Image (tube, rainbow, N blue to C red):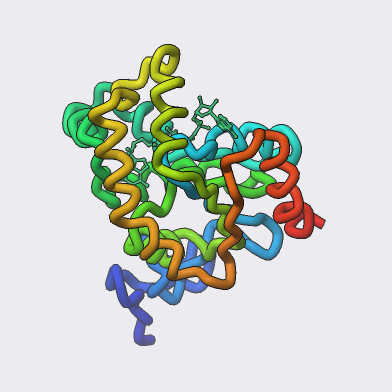
Length: 226
Ligand code: AP5
């Protein structure tokens, strides 16, 4: 009997689980199964400029909703600390305030999501996508996004917050020069990212007290978990 081949990996597809010997997880593959059933677990992208309060609000969301918080910045800093071969290169890119190549970011993100897919109540993806192509790659390789929360604040506010945090954060990129570069990278890409998702995008004015902002966040998330 002729064996059907998986188009991306060219391996035979077998009629049992796991369905493809290579489990290449390409959504183009007929054997592909998205790791997350988004009808049961929401995927929320949390976006905003550097210092817009993504991390601050994610902590509050985790406390109320029990979602799994994955910050691409934190994943990258952990990779840097691990001393892996690519750590030096990552440090240099992050200190220049530029974007790390997406193959690396998406790999880290995918690994972290897959490791928690079973038990997670939903995912908060903090700081991703930062480029139009990142959003496309995420939805092709992982799952469609449920809703996007975007924290909006002026460059002046963002700069002041990061400079205020610099004294205690210990982050190599919290200095005046790198903050300028991070802001530029953000401004160069942000409009294109947001323009891709007019129906899923929720903008929040982030120049208000933390709890006021969180009240608005809850009005977006409550219907998702109802
Ligand atoms: P990342 O770590 O994600 O940094 P960021 O986006 O610059 O954001 P921050 O974590 O600095 O700020 P935040 O928005 O979480 O604000 P926070 O709550 O801390 O990324 C670092 C680097 O990694 C990037 O530059 C890039 O090189 C790389 N990278 C990351 N993701 C990548 C990706 N997808 N692709 C490629 N490369 C990637 O708040 C900031 C301060 O403000 C705190 O002091 C806080 O207390 C205060 N604050 C918060 N809310 C309020 C409020 N409402 N009022 C007053 N103060 C407030």
